[in-house]
Image (cartoon, rainbow, N blue to C red; front, side):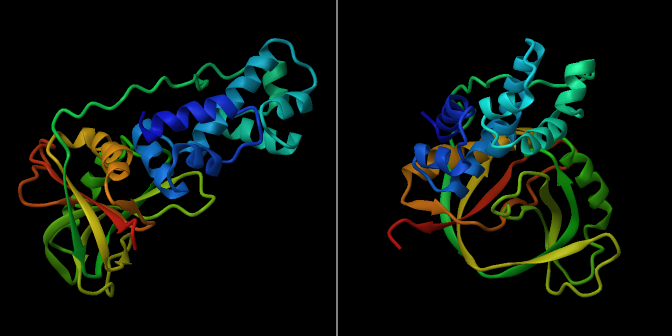
Length: 282
């Protein structure tokens, strides 16, 4: 069973309790960071958000069924107070529990059903190597996304494309899709940077930003399929390859590295996925 499948089972089995995401990670046998990355790429949302969506769905089921005491509903779906429950309910469904009880939900509201995760089957084998990389700098266009992978990333790349080759201090023509590490208690949005390598962050045009990427060891996977299926390769890297390897992931920049073979017009040609790791024996 994959890390994501174990996580889904744990969350759905314990979402009525005051569980924490660290509990699900422990049940999956990996670190909290490893669990969050593996789950997010396999499921399409963070484990924290899935937990919130499932709790809210169960709460609405109770309210729709006639439950009157909202504090009891809150406690029954794992919240310690009405205030925390109300914030989560409104964040997910756009209305407060009181409004939902009185008026119903907006017609476009999505209620999160339990996900029955099937094991990932890659269309091509995942080819991975491990390499050291010196520190470098990247600069580009950053956007926030509610989920990862996000369907809006392609539009972000379209906006960034005219800057490639025109950014001050650019080094080479390789492009990077960079995902900074999430903060410990960050739910969403996710940061994603369309970028190129630069020798200096000085003189960047308005609207662009840059970061220093630390030196480190990377697990590098070849993604040979269409760019739209990149989430499957990340899911396989975190959920299958890493647990069976002698490495564990580290918080750091996860990178999509687009070389000359990639065709941005068609999304074909393949590219590399870079994930910071360290040896489990170190």
